[in-house]
Image 1 (cartoon, rainbow, N blue to C red):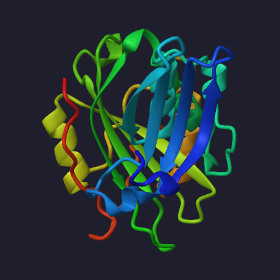
Image 2: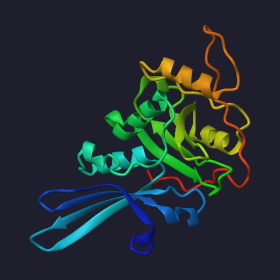
Image 3: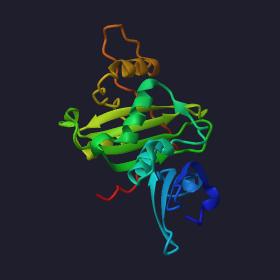
Length: 239
């Protein structure tokens, strides 16, 4: 943590009133020089033993902010205090993206288990940032036949907004193959209750294919990226 402390930008922090706990959400600007695909967010929980005058800490790296916030909440940080204190970054492009962020942040009933993730930040004004997060949907009925989900975050090159797409796959291998090849449209997961209209509107705005009022929204068409911007593989999270 101290080797690159001058590259860590605090996005959220909370210090308990008794001085025993500190929670931090940090943007690691040095991640672009790490292994290709490394997540750019780091969370830190410092626990202090006031009587013994000692401390220990846990930390973890994350691909996206909602998952980082979820980790802090599970460590004991009040949910409302895990919110960003300096939110000058991109905003959700639509209501469906905001809804997906909320799902990852709260992770109700421990629904999602993160298996893998990859961040493609080309550090160029010609491309935006793309993050793919592979999760296993452990308990929702809609995932019985396709329990592996890809959350694909696409940030515009002007860094003003981002869109989240959710794809469903029968296996982690199938999801990984899609991320690497991009030879077919992303197979969209069933829309969560009450959000079908939100995703249909997002699809119409994003897709180059025009649909009639009664037509089903098209699958998300994710364009091919240059080799410099293609997502790299990273090691899978331990079970």
